Length: 574
Image 1 (cartoon, rainbow, N blue to C red):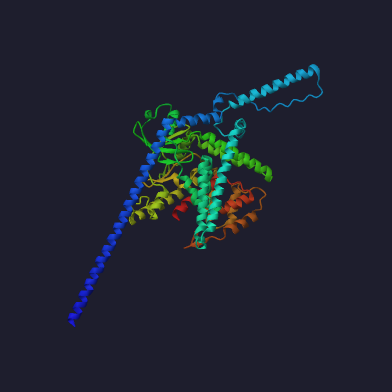
Image 2 (tube, rainbow, N blue to C red):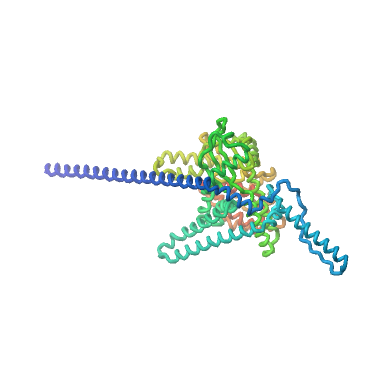
């Protein structure tokens, strides 16, 4: 009996040792597989980087050897008739084509009238020649821009064809993808629903990328409105914020030299080979000044003013045509003018530097808010030099905290994820506090509250970037705005409508009772979790906009900006 027990215990011990050894072997194999996969990922990544550098060097060599940039610039100047432009041309009074009519004249009087008519025709042709010499205005003015493009109808026609064929091509891609989806098995229908929306968004994103800066800006604005276009399309368009292809470094260095008036080496002892970021209107290089400061150098894309103003002019024409067809009250072209003023204002980097200095001075008492220092002597209309801010973006912190490592070869440990989550929550708390400071204390709002324009510094500050536009609030509207946010949180829609009326948002004569009922129907009752109102600002913003469009609210820019800022910070937490 004892021998049997001893034998069974020995066999059990052997089996336990065997299973332990087997599990160790299995875990070692898994570790080797994971290590091999990580090594493979690193090799693939390095190969891709090598190919990317090789291709970019090849393109730069071709550009330098074949003078592609110079030829392209010459053709562009010829197409836009820039050789005829004179920056010092005096202003012209608008004239129309002469239409002489003198049926009762005869003889000498008729001859003299004909001579007068010829003189009028010659005067009009002279006026046209002078009109061609008028350059594109650097400040947005609808009439001056209309005069400029009336002398260049071919530019407008070519662009209309380009836009038409781009969207037609996108429509064909979407249609063919729909046919392919129809031919798939029905078991994939559930999966394909969201994928088809995402595919539509990706096609739209590529179309807007191809159409240039103005369309990219429109796409970026749409990406912040998932309530209108849907979450999948919004997700696809959000890539327009950080996946803009850069332009040539040689062109960027030439723009710096043209703006600063001397070779780059006179001002910077180092500028990175590749841009650290590329946006719709420009790209940023990391550099070091000759006196040792680490800076970010923002360079504007070439010929950007002409491209943006051309697209705004076409948008204005389209809205004018729509106004005539729809016969609605109000002039929708004013929306194009407002957009044009904002976009053209962003093209002057000296204004951005002034905005940053104003924002910094207004928020000096609040130590948790950081604004980069501007180097005014190295800033011009198309070049902006500012202090390099070391910090993490909300997107990076969110990626780390959710366990989606950026580098596949070095996965983050659990404590690193927890630390990233702590920093993200601190960033969100300070972002909300900064929004309230801008609302209640300074009345000066950052006009582009996008995660790409925020940084969380090692010292725990929230740094703001990109001051192309600032929004200034009147003092009387600040407390009404705060009251409206409190009413949103509490779900008090009647008081919200009252606050909107105090801010001159609701037009006189509007049926207040109907507006309140529509808001109650659209937003419903506020749900409470642990006694705290559970409000999603992204949802509220979309619903308020739908009611605003119905009743023609005069929505001030700061209202949308503040709610967008809170919604953006809220999304990072969610």
